[in-house]
Image (cartoon, rainbow, N blue to C red; front, side, top):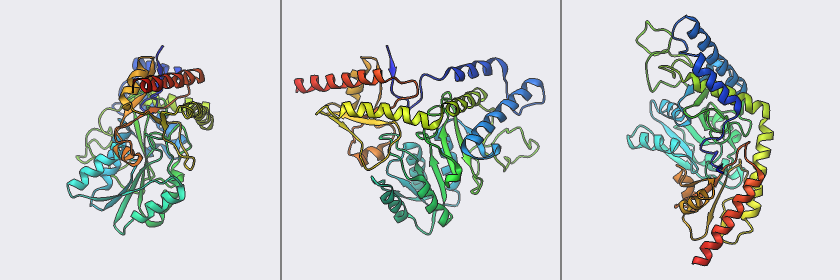
Length: 380
C-alpha cells in the first residue's frame, strides 16, 4: 500500500468533489470569454463562479482574482511587475526558489537590488530583522507565509504593517498556508500568490494571484483576453491585464470545488487534524537517538516536519521509506536559502500530511524510520 506524505508538494489524493468537478468540466465546458454561444456562456459563468468562490475565501472582489499556472507563475507576475523602474527588494532567508530566482535574475541584470532578512525563532525578532533591511528605496517585501522546509510560520501581519506604514508593496507566497490557516488581504497583504493544487485541493497547473489593486502590475505576456479586442494594447484592468490566452477552465473548476471542500471541512479543523499527525510523528521520532527533527519550541508551524537520520543522506532515507510504501520528499525542496539557514545543505526528509492521512500510517512511518536508523547504526 502506498501512503502519500508529500502533500506540501501537491495534495494526493484529491477529494471526490474535485474529481467530479474535473470530470464535469471535461465533458461540459469549452473556452471562457470567447464567444456568445451557449458553451462559451456557461463556461464563462463557471469561471466567474470560481473567481467569486476564491474572492469570498480571501476577502476580495472577483475581479481581484487572477488565475495562473501555479504559485511560481503568480510570484513572477508580482515580482517582475514590481521591478518596473528598479528599486530595492527584501526577501527572507527561508524563501523558495520561486522567489529567490526571479529576484536574483533581476538583480544580476542590474534592474533591482535586494537584501535578505533573517527569520528568527520569535516573531518579534523576525519583524525587527525585516525592519532592519528596509531602505528609502525599498519597493517590495516578498516573503513566504510559512517555510516549505520546516513549516515555520512567519509573522506576516506584522511584516505587512511595516510595509503599509512605509508605502511598500507586500507580496506573500501563500503556497504552504492557504487552506491551512486563515489568510486574507485584510491582513495587510497587497499581493497574495498561492497554489491551487496544495492546501486548496485543486489539480496541478493551477494557482492564483490576488491583488488589492494598490500597486499596478504590467503584464509579463500579452494576448487575447476576450476584452477590448479592437485595441493593440493589453487591457489595463484586473484580471484581464494579467490573464491572456485560453484559461485553464478545468483547473478553475477544480479550484472552486477544492475551496468549497476546505470551507466545508473548516480551516481550523484541517489545521488541528494535520498538526496532530505532525505532533504524533515528532513524539515518536524524538525518542530515536539518531534522528534529528528540525523544530523549535519558540516558533509556530504549519503541518510540515523535516527530519534526518544520522549518517544517512536524506535521499537515501526517503528511498528506503519508499520501498516500504511511504512517499516523502527529500533533498533541498527547491529552497536552498532555508537549508543554508538550517545548516542542512544536503537536505532533509519532509513529512507533510493531508486531511486524508491516518494516525496508524504515521505510526507505521515512525516505526519504519526507527528501523532504518537502527539498521544504519548497526552497519556503521
